[in-house]
Length: 114
Length: 110
Image 1 (spheres, helix red, strand yellow):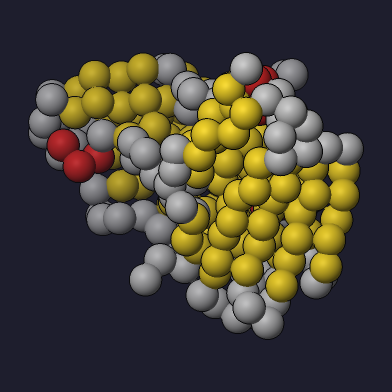
Image 2 (cartoon, rainbow over the protein chains, first blue to last red):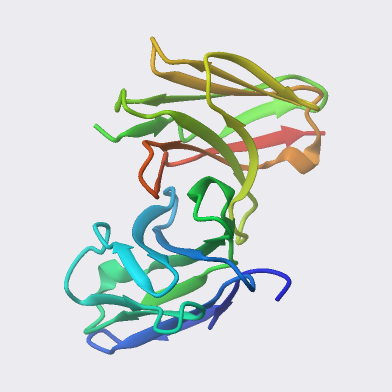
């Protein structure tokens, strides 16, 4: 595709509900990153994939957060039992050669937990 | 203390003037630094990268790095209303992740 595509663009979840956020990276991009951006803050790293391998998940805030990329392309970020503090924009980025500094960001999914 | 710190602003600059954005970082291992521009409701867009001490110029933008002082700055010359956005400073320690500051909101007044 032309760019990193994320869906849905907006999601409202009731507290306690599970959500799944999808990221379609640029075709052929090896590396994929997830970031969380709270209102008025900079993005914070969540996790990193190289192909299907999750090489760093040190930024996932709790065991309610889970990410996968089973075929090395599309990735899903799943949040179980959502809490109000999970409300944020979730950004996905991808890069061709694995350098985070060359990554392109998607438009993000704005999650609101009510 | 956050690893990367920025003044959140807002910073207001008249059109045509120089906008100066500043950033400090705490981890001396950080090797490379980046400035991203983020329009409201949009994704961050890389505008400048800098890896060594000194200045790096690209069009109207100049990035400055001082590793001894752990300080990074971005200068925007001849500011335009279209430069109004949030500017994010980020550092990379070599691991596959960027550490971002909170961003500085810049407004260019016509």
